Length: 412
Image (cartoon, rainbow, N blue to C red; front, top):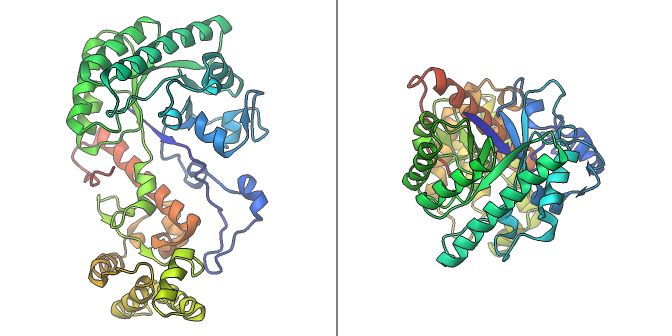
């Protein structure tokens, strides 16, 4: 079972100066100098990367003239060594046009296939259309049928052109039976790899029901089944035993900065809250601080005091309660309805247990306590990449040492 990480340009400055909060390069050099997780770690914490064309189309220059940022290969753009076994899968990013009646012209069958081929993707997914639960049944069936039609045209075009990338047939549905029918029809078209979409909105039981139906219907056929956008730890073991071939998710990366209380994951499966010390020029923080009677100078002093306290505590030169006091005083500026006790307990647990000291990953060894500070992309993304590394190591070990490692708390 393979794990793909969706790519959203989650790179970091490898030589960022945390003490001065300064980049080691100019902003214009960010792409050239910054690195991906597979460059930060001694071995990649995933089996492949999923690139959604819609994301790249909106964020960077990606066109049908065989280039992305002026580079002729997606692997070159992602800075993947030629010797690497990482697989690069491309899809349309149907979430970007979910409200449209049909996929935009930019995602036409020939255009998408030509782009996969010219940029030398390993796997390329046919043009699909997501099926939200909110749609009427007739619209759901229209989108399912359209996705099937696109898959048929896509594999025919792929064969006609003799393209080298592996075609992946997108499968859409709205109930287990519709997914089963779509999967069977897609495989009958000649696909050896299929990808099942519109699963994010499904419960664990619904996900398992769909997976069981599909796998049972494809029994005896050599087909690799991918699940788009889902990482469900409670059912991962069964999905693996069913024969699901791969999945993709950015959950453990995003939780580093999106979910209070679950920002930093340990190999024992425990989540910790990051210590929030945002930049003092943060507009929301300044607005809140000024409304509470603090001046700009006051805010800057509280920020510096909090940073100093955490760093001194990490060195063993400050007491826990003194550190918490400095952190919480600054933390109280973040919102008008601040409840000190909520963050007090979370921060106390993080600081008293010092989980970053127990981690031997390359990120924690190099930056230490900075990884637990919620402050800017270079800290927050490093923490997210640490989470991915911890999950992936657990995921690999679980395959050969079932039951010997604790499972991380489920994270959506």
